[in-house]
Length: 379
Image 1 (tube, rainbow, N blue to C red):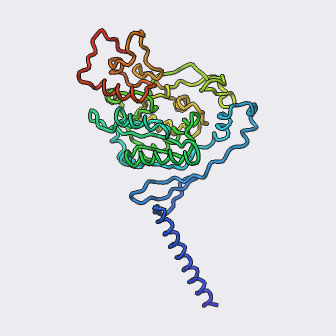
Image 2: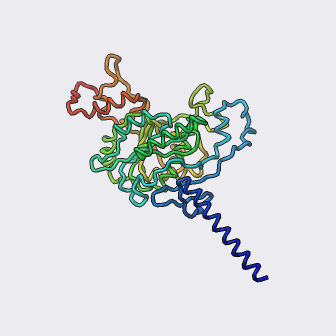
């Protein structure tokens, strides 16, 4: 009997070694060499090799079919229905990661300004222009500037694969993209913000300040650094959230509007104060507070309003900065050139720029021969 047991153990051990060997061959063939899995909360982290980033493996989020029982659900637009079906989904597989973008969590305080730019996969031309202009990684006034584009996925089938491959190629060259496997749509902009904040807490918790904005804005990041350096007693460890302040407004109930929010999504008729989502500045401290608050606030599809909701819950307020123009610049006369660089030399941010105009404007405001006389009204 003892011999039978011994043979059984030997056979089991041999089979175990064979399985491990086969698994290793399969993994090597896939060019992935994972180490031991570690359980963290309700998800798994595959421990990477020294050259590999952490890969978060979340189970695919299932549709909440009970949303269909909400009063008036059947009459809602398809996009709203889809949002309600998946509103609870907050965790998605990461496709492209940047674990060392800030030099590691322990060294992230060296990053003075982290540029966090929302960009859909298809917007390659915008990303290329930004890399050459205001989002160029550099040191200005002894302040380190780093850049990140945050993205989801688009389309399906072959087109989705092509766009994902595009971002992969960009990542190889520039190392500046965070991508998750969720649909990159207008109603998922808040999800994109929530996922980024989770990434920041893990990989870049001590960055001093952030610019959070769209990929079609003109941002004078030199001016931003100088403004942030001028703040008294705030090195990023205190509250700051500033931009184009919007107050005393509520959900738009018209189904024809891009920003339509029915009562099934938001019952309240008022929003807390918030800053226009085209672009705003915030401290690292405030970014982490927003992340903490977001854990217990139901997702609203309007991302800038959601940021305001998180601030309100924390007892913090956004502030207005006159040099942030997310609704565009108002030029007083049609006879004046709306793209005169003298109007843009002293601003922090202006929304809605074509890539070609943005590229030209960046170079024009840095032209040493640019002269803006006292008669030229700066807006």
